[in-house]
Amino acid sequence: MSKEDITGQTLSDYLNQNTDSDSDSDVDLEALELETIDTPAIETNISTVDEITEEDMPVEESTVLESTFKIDIDLEQLNKIKNLPVKKFFSRSKDNDDIGSGINDWRKRLSNFYISEEPIIIDDMSWTTLEGLFQASKFMYNKDDPVYMNYIAKFQHEGEYGSDPKKSKRQGGKTASKKNKVVLDPNWDTLRNKVMFKGLVYRIAQQPDIRSILEKIKDAYFLLHHSSRDTYWGGSKKGAAEIKGKNVLGSM
Image 1 (cartoon, rainbow, N blue to C red):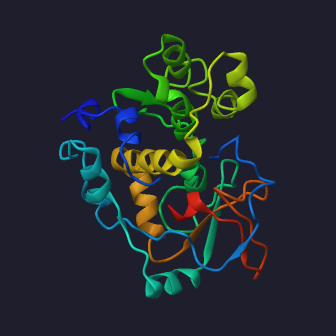
Image 2: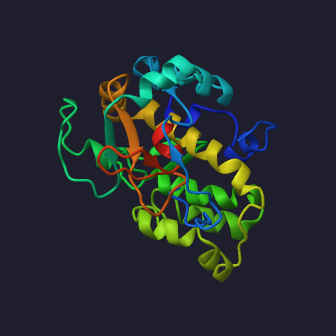
Image 3: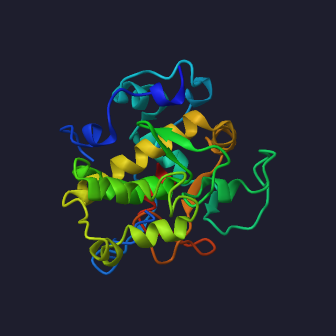
């Protein structure tokens, strides 16, 4: 099975299912309540990720999610994780293979800004970075409109913004979208977690280096998407102090 055949559904179809749901330039940081957390919001068990290949990726979206990740919100597990050493990562992290992965820039690779050598294929679309997918997904609710589809194409692998995650982030914002006569999905705040999670699932399934890094992290460290500004997707920590922020991306 080719990467293009991984799913028979479009991303929009998937997102419009009745299920709960950034590096997001549209997060209202002032509206977010800055909180101190001592447990991650989500614990992710990746024990089956390394067994998944392109050939045996299931067809249905729900099966992809269920076979790749098992989400456990378990008090005993959460207590275990909160006591693990914290490993910070972000797009400009210094190279240091301090987890024994054999990959010096593992922190950069975990970032949504990382430019993959091979594009990530999701719903017959190619993405150089997860940031491109994330920002483009804000406009996929209106994919029947050629203006929207032309704009979405600019975020894809060979698109104008495809290899520039900073530009992707900027063009996915309210100011740029207004200038380009497109409107962000009115349900985006509900859908954004699902979009991010799905992108991560497909990236892990298609990129062995990411699976290798996460296997070294699993049960040994707690991942923190380091950001003092974005307290939703990331968070900050100094010394022995508690993590400030929700760290949703790190917890995924």
